[in-house]
Amino acid sequence: MENVIAAAQAIYTDEQRMLLENFRKMAEAEFAPLAEKYEDLGHPPDADTLKSLFAKVEEFGLISGLIPEEDGGAGIDRMTYGILYEELARIWADLAIAVLIQSHAVFAVNLLGDAAQKETYLKPLLRSERICATCISEPEVGSNVREVKTRAERKGDKIFVTGQKLWISNGAQSDFAIVVCNLDDGISMVIVDRDKGGYESRELRKMGLVGASTCELFFDRAETTDAHVLGNSGGGLFQTLKLFESARVFVGLTSIGIAQAALECAVKYAQDREQHGKPIGGHQLIQGYLADMATHLDAGRLLCQRGLQLLDMGVRCDTQTSMAKWYATEMAVEIAGKAVQIHGGNGITKEFPVERHFRNAKVMPIPDGTTEIQKLVIGRNLTGLNAF
Ligand SMILES: Cc1cc2nc3c(=O)[nH]c(=O)nc-3n(C[C@H](O)[C@H](O)[C@H](O)COP(=O)(O)OP(=O)(O)OC[C@H]3O[C@@H](n4cnc5c(N)ncnc54)[C@H](O)[C@@H]3O)c2cc1C
Image 1 (cartoon, protein in one colour):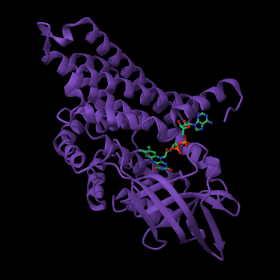
Image 2 (image 1 turned 60 degrees about the horizontal axis):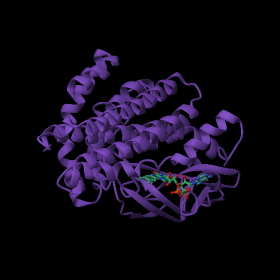
Image 3 (image 1 turned 180 degrees about the horizontal axis):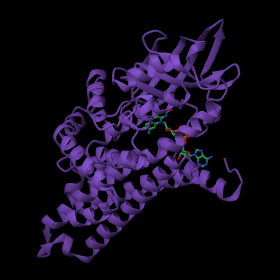
């Protein structure tokens, strides 16, 4: 299998391959054991541990990489960033999700924040001293982002936020939250500090990615100020949709990492396990499965990498990022499912990692716009007709 991987990676530059190798060495040594540990514990790391993990990935620029050096970031091109991010997802997908949220909070505050907000929020994020959650979804608001119900009431220069958010990544460990809510002049993004404004979180128990926090957040007249409105007051919907464009590719890449891990398990098992007098990988049907898995995986990866390149070019690419997100996440479910099948009975036990890869893959077609919503975005852009 190494020869197949090496041939595919021949399109990477020498520098990208070297970075990948260094990152892999670190992540295999430091993160792989923790991935097992938190899987067994069945809950995410606490805030201090997560901050130290963020500091570790930041040695390779994975927290600050999406913003330029002049703004304090590592200023990595998205293709290179994506190569490292995929590898992180292959080794510990749960941490990759936490990194995705934190790095996009960095991206959002840098893009939309004023000087004071950058001082108070961006700098501590870059130093991995604080953790941010991004709150859009609510119990009654998932795919229909326009209909958020959380209210923000202005009183003088104070703002009071009231409402419930759902499925919030990094919610348990977060120090502050970017809350998409209704302010008097329309949907806006408002920053709420946990220690000042006060919000409560409750961890949700999931089928997969159990080492990544996903929470309910409760805001009961959580206090913040006018100076905490991020970007344009009333411009929160447009800002949210723009941020989705980038985040969606990384959700896709998370699935590519998970599927790569599942494929590697399947190939090894097919080489080792013998039935009917030869390794099962020597039977044509199993080879057919493996060929399908490897091809779908590469197609998903290439769609994601094209999305990264288009984002770097600064052109509108919501069609292409939606294609990358739905295809990569759905194919990963198929690939991980086939990997379980190739393992026979062993595939459904916790003795073999494919069971975890399958559960993790099944989570990913949902966040940042479900498969159905991605297809409606693509259909709308093809026809000019809005179906949702
Ligand atoms: C692991 C994880 C992490 C997440 N992290 C965050 C986070 O950090 N912040 C945040 O704000 N949210 C987060 N989410 C929430 C996520 O974005 C939502 O779950 C997602 O948008 C879907 O919303 P919903 O679950 O309410 O489903 P619904 O919107 O209720 O959809 C249910 C089903 O109906 C389909 N559907 C809905 N509308 C249509 C339509 N018009 N046509 C056809 N089908 C339709 C959907 O595709 C889906 O299959 C996360 C979710 C998960 C699973």
